[in-house]
Image (tube, rainbow, N blue to C red; front, side, top):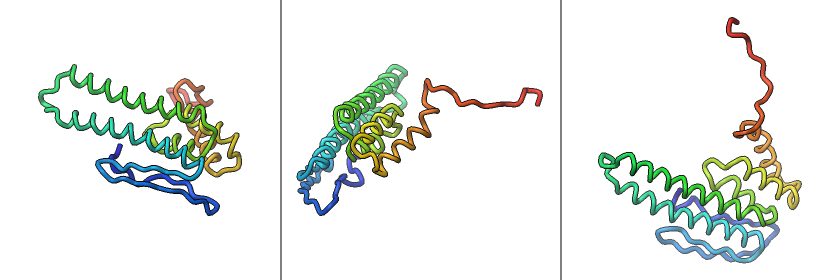
Length: 168
């Protein structure tokens, strides 16, 4: 999380023109106008920044606690709230990816917004992008990522392995 992210994502191609309005304050606010791809990216950016604002408020409350006075129930409440905030962000990102056609915003949603993106979301994004951007390097990257991590995902079949007996 960062209240000052490293930048505002923008898609530029084929001499297209867009309008970018940036407001600097406690958080970087941005408005992208000009084409369909950037409008979707703008929706995703606002979703991400909205989550960051909520997470920043949460972190402020946690930082204000006296660690020596926090008992087990306080620690459990903090953990539950943190997991709830992350679950909410995941659900919102999935809701963003699900109805939209595959665009670069779909790629960003599946790769940059979460520390540990679930394989199911990466796979869903790859499938969306296969339909609309089948030859894109971004689509290929998502497909490769799914192929490399899906066998390691919880509930997947373990690969065949052969081990030596305990006695060697």
